[in-house]
Length: 239
Image 1: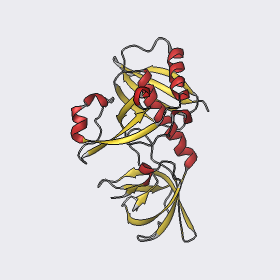
Image 2: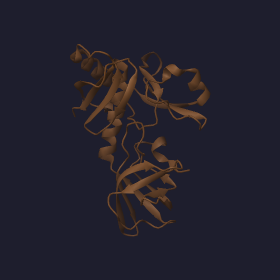
Image 3: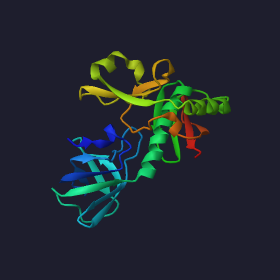
């Protein structure tokens, strides 16, 4: 299994690794990776690999059928050979925006405490879909509360619980569309705030900022009707 460097340090932007396989689609599999693979509404990371005076631009990162992680080149090109040692260079500016956005969506699920039916993360605008029959009446107040949570500069941490512990606490899961993947024996939880200042705790495999203050100013966008019981709420980074 690939060592997930982004899991232990999401702020790491450069690291060496060994090429262990090529996929049939032309992807590169490493023994350890900085690059997050597309999952949970968060896009895969981009960047480049460098070796022997050669570089390979990476457009995105995906999961393989056997549970590995493959770095997908931006265009067909010569791949680093299996066994080669490469240096991974993460597109940090893009990743950091995705981290800020992902954490912001967790806060959005706090100020709109309704079941989540879907979501998608991008660099400038993201969204959550809620089981919400009517659109919120006072978006300005919601936006104010959202930015107050940012301004509190709450710590964002993670921890692990067993599959059985999650099954015994189904209220931790906010998403209606899918349960977190079970079967490995443990599930990662992301916590925002500590003790009496805790505002959120839910299963999540994505990358997040260390404190909410790092997110910056947020703006609520339009609310779209996506069905009788479904409303799509957009969120923008203002800085």
